[in-house]
Length: 303
Image (cartoon, rainbow, N blue to C red; front, top):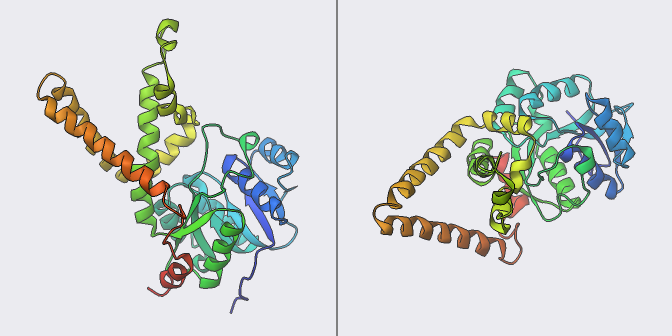
């Protein structure tokens, strides 16, 4: 029988990019002992230089390991960390959840001590120098436990997320991936495609760019290789949303020279979607109103 996980005081962060280093800084802000490791020693040194933690793997088991690597590497790194006995509990921050969950089982990972995670935060800049201890303040942090995840591990990770200023919610991996395809992955791809229309544009065109095009293309500055991995890891869900968008684009193209009512209807649906988003985000207690996270935690391992 494993000893129950209580409050977390020491953490190993594996992967010192934007999210990993930001998590380390946020945890350090709460007085925790943090160890930093990355296959790129330059990134780990830069994170340590920013005060994110102690350079290197911990000399003995810590309370929690945060795996902060791209989705395609998450399961392999988790398996390696568990083989080394790096900590008593494990989580990750990958932006796709179904593929790492399936691969973790194939790698023979101990799923009782692991809970998947994804902070809904980020930025167009990448790397440890872009990290911020405030990145997760008032942001949703999705937890995707397996049916075998121990409740005390899930509660400890949820408590840690709350302590650093984020708002934990519980979702199934497939539900998470379906949601982020619509709210994060396709928006990033569409932003990149819009920005691509400006590649090679002359200065006269670029000088006409106002707040609208700047706002809609901001996230297109994200790391292209990393985003290629993220998008491919959620290919089925993204393809389904892209098919919907493609249908609407065809309708819009035909309506420009045809029935104006069709174009008005498309724009009206856009109005409705934006209104739904702003209404939800302005609701009291956003983003955690009505979540009841600890009830969710209990139900997630008793289903």
